[in-house]
Amino acid sequence: MNEVYICDAIRTPVGRYGGSLSSVRTDDLAAIPFKALMDRNPDMDWTAIDDIFMGCANQAGEDNRNVARMASLLAGFSETVPGSTVNRLCGSGMDAIGIAARAIKSGEVDLIIAGGVESMSRAPFVMGKAETAFSRKAEMYDTSIGWRFVNKKLDKMYGTEGMIQTAQNIATDYNICREDQDAFAHRSQEKTDVAQKNGSLAREIVPVIVPQGKKDPIEVSQDEHPRLTSLKKLSTLRSLIGENGSITAGNASGVNDGAAALLIASSKAVKKYALRTKAKILGMATAGVLPRIMGMGPVPATRGLLLKLGLTLDDMDIIELNEAFAAQSLACTRELGIKDDDPRVNPLGGAIALGHPLGMSGARIVTSAYYQMQNSNANRALCTMCIGVGQGIAMVLEKV
Image 1 (cartoon, rainbow, N blue to C red):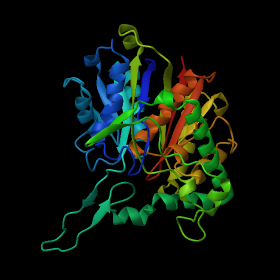
Image 2: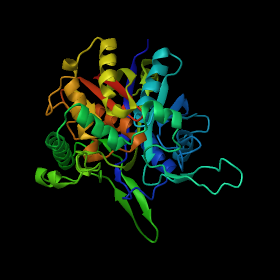
Image 3: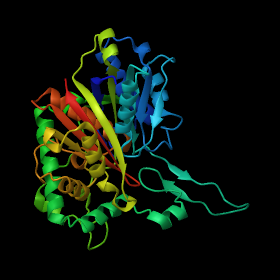
């Protein structure tokens, strides 16, 4: 099988819900890292791209009609370059990268752009059509996150609990106390604060210029979700799920906007286009779990992938675990035998601090691991995340 290389990667800042990026259309947002890759690699023949894969979880608004294709045209790619949008909910961006890697490994293609996008701020309300003539019943749903148009049979079989409830299920089932959740969340915020101040995160980011009507445009160059506070303050936040719950806004990820894209190539393409190789993708795996504890998906996905690769967690220098919730992150690390404060886990902070634009997040953590390996002695990185409706995904990178 062909080896698969990441030759470049870039992302936008992650915007707050209703924040600085909320006025940017989703297809325009996805086009920004595409255009950045083109600008950063001016000698590349961009008509040689075999395909573009873009993860996106919503696809009910401006991200409809194949946002990968629309964004590639907006970015200035030739109309001869095709594109496909991938939806594995939270794992969409990582799945897009994995699909690209598998296609290159097979020898069918040599050069792909893969990534992910989500504008949760701009996700629309959707309304179903009437099921009977003259019906006056109208069902409307906010598509930003969560279930809509629930299948009653599926609900009876497996339940259709919301994301917060699934996190509470894990906290209860795996005995993850509120104090440990808040401590994990606080560490995430602290690490992100340091990374923003020392420029570690800036390496990943292309600034976004946002028009302001008659006023001068603003430049957004830094993630705007982080909100470092004290452990004492975190402990005062109310539960999002009743008096006995432990999930709060402080120990959960955010609702956010952002996009990321990576240039992925075979050895043949690397030589032909004189590309720089910084990391290679060793493999990707997915797994299923009960939807009520969807946050445990990284455990079987990671175990399955490491077994296939003949590696162990001891071989990993960086572990980028998407922090959907502190409860599920801790349950996963403990099940995998990783200490709560293992320094390998999210060295620059995770989604609790940085935010979680669904379709982008998988591509963001792969991008982050890619840059961290370049700027440290780390040789291998595990990237893994949970996925709504009960799945997990994992990928291993190796420094070149």
